[in-house]
Each structure stands twice: as C-alpha cells, then as structure tokens.
Image (cartoon, rainbow, N blue to C red):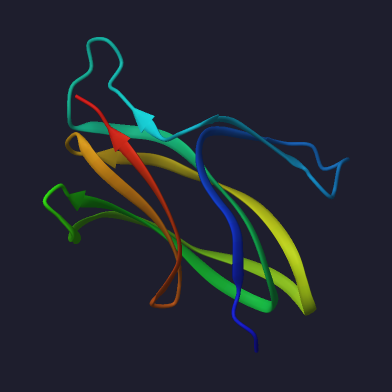
Amino acid sequence: MEPVIVHHFLVCRRATSDFSQPDNPYSLHNVVFQLSPEAGEAYPLDGIDLWVFVRFEGEDEHEFWVDVVRVASDDEYEVEEITTYGPLIVPFGHAPRTVIRAWYLRGVPFPIAGVYEFRLRQGSEIIAVETIRLEE
C-alpha cells in the first residue's frame, strides 16, 4: 500500500460545503495564521471552534488524527500536547485518488499566547503540519 500524500492542510474559522459541486465542495472562510483574543477576553481561551481542510491522495481506508500542540518558543522540538481529534476515517477506494475533507474541531483550547501546531497524524507518523500564532 502506497503512503498517503498530503497536498493541502489548512486551519480556518469556518468551512461550508456545497455537494452539488462534487469536485470542489468546500469553501474556506477566514484561513487562520494568527489569532488574538477578542476585546475583554484573556487566556486561557477555551472553546475556539475551528476547521481543518485537507486535500490528499491515497488508496484503501485510513484513520487520521489531528493533534494540537503548543511549541515552546525557545525549542521547536519541545511541545505541550493540548488536545487530539479523531479518529477521522477516510475511504479512498481501491485505486489511488484525491480526496478532500473539512473537519470541524469543536472547542480548541489555547491556554496561553504562543505558537501552536495542528498536526495531521496517520498512526504515529505526522504527515502534515499547519502553524498558527496566538497573540497577547
């Protein structure tokens, strides 16, 4: 079995779908690279609803997880695990094909400002990463 190939992995505030357009059913709204607390909010931020969009290629059926981790500012390899979503099951079919998915991540917690990674994982292998920064 060939490995899954990720073409796009993005975090956004909202995704909508129109399955009358089967080749491109998702519209992404407010792609996230940086977030700040709303006026009057302070850390920890609990319950931020986000979406991840994935376009990937594979065959057969696979399980995926999305891990959210905070990256230490002085050491990119030191991380704090925040939460995990999944398993997210994707049936690709018997021959290699491209599949797109938008998954809703309800209530993502952000304990402090800093750099966070959304990691798409297949088993123990991280196959895609999207980084966002939370400002003070």
